[in-house]
Image (cartoon, rainbow, N blue to C red; front, side, top):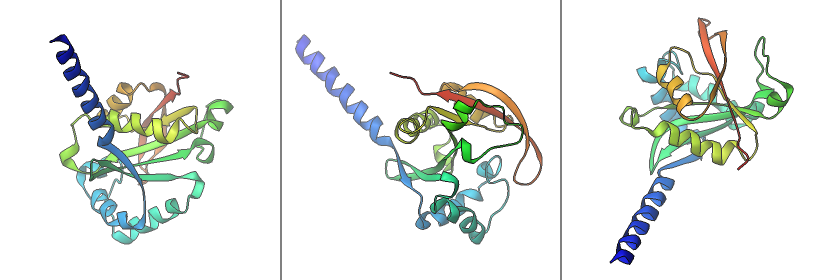
Length: 197
């Protein structure tokens, strides 16, 4: 009987682990995704802290096309939960994207990537996917190439600030900046270092 119980536990542990591993996937952004991004950019919850305003399809194409060409090392992905596209995530080398009064060490600047992301589908908000997305993205797309990862959510974006705390990012400093609409904004800069495990 104990053998049966242990076998059952092992089976379900393996099954659940495999199911979890297959939940989140990343597909490299291509032009076929632009219509989806256009829809997401015009949703209120995405406009609140990411797209910031209404966008035409042509504006979305103009913004994203350079990313497809790898300008400044930008790498962009659609986030999939199973077979369903649910959001967008991008990474970029910090050394190619400096900002005013940047006070990071040369080591961090040379060995860090920044990330930005949003969940576009309302039905997937508040489901606890954020950490799963970030941790998988770090494992697959950041840690093989970089030692540090940075993120800078708006301090008013409480959900995003909580998410980066939950994922083990450390607060570095607050940055006074301007958003894409030239409005004053305070960003919370987070840093996470790759663990040598």
